[in-house]
Image 1 (cartoon, rainbow, N blue to C red):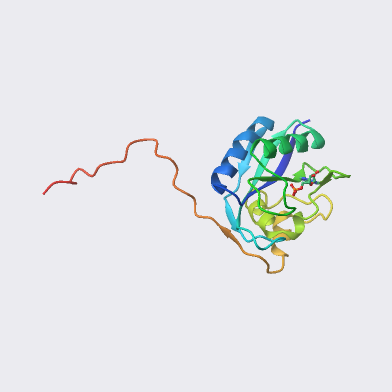
Image 2 (image 1 turned 180 degrees about the vertical axis):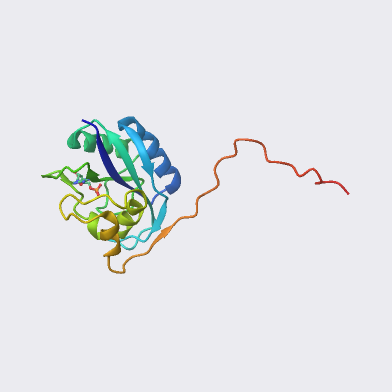
Length: 179
Ligand code: AMP
């Protein structure tokens, strides 16, 4: 059965925006991407002395089961060069499962909803952009309510979108060069 999965993506090494875009392209192999939030500049939370992250949230329809889905995410992290050197340290790409339909999973390697989902502004701000009314299946609050209940904390700012690649030559002003 198809389920709607919400993911958190983050990067703070290399070309962060290109890393998020590359991960989103790879996610398309796991199902149908339904929504992608804006990208957010976020202050590191757990290990402060590292570069700021770029984060976003993605909604994706998938036929996969949660464990199978997690394994596929870890495959993407590995293929993109993620190295697990320092726990909570800088990373090319981090992919977390936030919600998996209304499933509740609590096993050694996988917890859904993500155990820190309700505590992190860098997760809830992008998620609230694409799924404000989605309910947390354990706490029963909506994503918007969880976001609004957060205490002030590390900074999260919407990043200004970078210009897309040109698809047509720049327009030349007809008067340019005259006179
Ligand atoms: P991280 O270093 O943040 O990528 O954490 C990865 C570890 O968290 C993996 O070993 C996963 O097995 C585990 N994990 C538990 N729950 C989740 C979840 N909801 N999404 C992603 N990873 C999870």
